[in-house]
Amino acid sequence: MFEGLQQRLGEIVRKVTGRGALSADDVDATLREVRLALLEADVNFKVARDFVARVRSAAVGQQVWKHLSPGHQVVKTVHEELVRLLGGEARELRVAPHRPSIILLVGLNGVGKTTTAAKLAGHLRRRGRAPLLVATDLQRPAAVTQLEVVGAQVGVPVFSAPGATDPVAVARAALARAESEGHDVVVVDSAGRQHVDEPLMAELSAMHAALAPQETLLVLDAMAGQDAVTSAEQFAARLPIDGLILTKLDGDARGGAALSVVSAIGRPILFVGVGERLDALEAFHPDRMASRILGMGDVLTLIERAQEATSAASAAETERKLRRAQFTLSDFLEQLRQVRQMGPLDQLLDMIPGFAKARQAGLTVDEKQLRRIEAMIQSMTPQERATPSIIDGSRRRRIARGSGVTVQEVNRLLKQFEEARRLLRHVDEHARGRGPLPFPPR
Image (cartoon, rainbow, N blue to C red; front, side):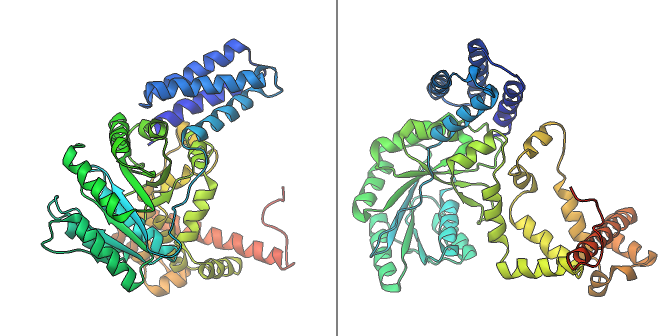
């Protein structure tokens, strides 16, 4: 989503850090470029103006143009103000100590609220909670059925009352069920409308009064731009909103909503949706997002995704096989699938510091190649995966036909895999004191 802004700010960062000294006029010119980049990203005019004013005030206070590395000081100040613009510090969900915690999700139709409810429940379940989903959207056709389907996919039960017309009564009955069955979190999917109107706000106000939720979270479509900010202001004027969830942050919008909405209503972003899969929900960290926007990567989130995609025992077994050169094509296929479970490849690589700059320089990422490799390995027999050396010419032609690739691509895969195993074998022998490294030490 922030690709355009990331590219513009990346150019500004490279320009300012490449100078040995900065004058006050240089700082002003740089901040004018930053302001223009924010406006082009659909950031609210007032938010962009105040942001640049704070950066300039901080720069003047530090007199960065007199500093030994003034360009890096400007970048540091911009990063700090971006973190502040995005909410400062990450905030976790509040939970009740002695009764089911109630999370009420509100928002307009079309923002992904029902899917987000399932994503959030799945997120809580993976962290040891016992959530219950509650279907109180009795207005939209098939809303209850949709929640039941996605709830089943994330392994979370859904409470519904067929034929009910009073959403408040449904929510109260669900709370009683949660208490009797030992659920410690109740996630309520409320009704929405195409636009904010009086009947919707009256229903949500009654729901809030009846449930007294620990968290009332507003779900916003990050691709809606300033319409999302307007919607947030309307909801916050009538409901005690505690936090925000932004959906579709992996989309191709300019990202202005994410940079404007916190300032607009003074509430933090708690989660962001980063894909269509039901596990594609991340806790929001302002400092990490600011680093991504500036092209500095996000190693911590990358590590967290990797930890969720594989167990410690699996990682240890893979390491053992790698060190002893016992790594087979079946193991490689399993690792490939785990990488793909972590999310789109370009999204993962953008979390590596410096990779965004390489992409801007023309480096492309072909995720289709991963699918071709997976198809080639799946076209092999178990014996061929375990012992690639038996794959002769006729077998290679069969594998190529079965996976829809050329024989040359099969040859390339087998050659690269064998070279990797040979390298790992040399590294392991060196670790055991049996020989030199296959490459010179640094």
